[in-house]
Length: 114
Length: 114
Image: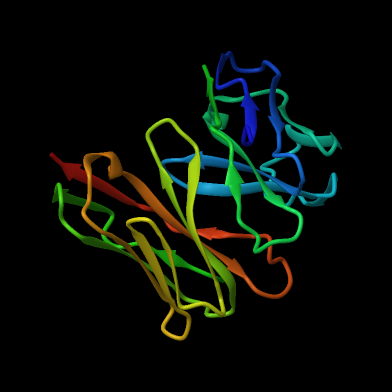
C-alpha cells in the first residue's frame, strides 16, 4: 500500500499567489482530514470529509481557504490569495472505513509564502 | 474542552536504556488513544492505537498503556536505539459527537545517543 500521497512536498510562492495542495488517500479509506502544523500552534484540524462530503470546515482559517473532494481518491486544499502567515506544513490524513479509527498521515506539503 | 499534555517536552537517553513517555488528558470520555512518531520533515507515523476498553497494546519493543480513569497513557520503549530518535505524539479521539476531532499533545522530542 502506497500510503497517503501528497503533492507537492515543498512549495515556495509569493504573497498573493494561489496555492493548491493535493492529496490521494489510501484506497478504502472513507474519512479524509486536512491538518496544518506550525511550531506555535501544533497540529490544527482544518477540514474533515466523510464519504467525499465536507462534514466540518470550522477549522478553515478564513475564506481564502477552500477544500474539495470530488471523488474518493482525490482531495485538494486551495489558498487564494496566499499570505506569509499561511506558511506551515499541511498534512492530509485518512481513516479506513470500519475498524478502530486509526489515522494515517501523508508526508505533508511544506508551504512557504514570501 | 479536552487538553492533552506530554511531559517531558524533550528527553535524551543513552542507547540501550528502557524509557517511558507520558501523555495525560483531561476528559476521560475517549474513544481511543493513538501514539505517533514524527521524524524531522516527515509526516506522523502511527505506532499504536489503544481502544478505550483496552489497557495496553504492544508492537515489538513498544508497549502503550491506557488508564482512562486517571487520564493517562504511557509509551514504553525497550532497549532504545539511535533510530528511535524522533518526536513522539499522542492523540485522543473523543467518544460521542464530533468523535473525528482528535486532540494532539505537543509531543516529546526523544534523542537516543549512541
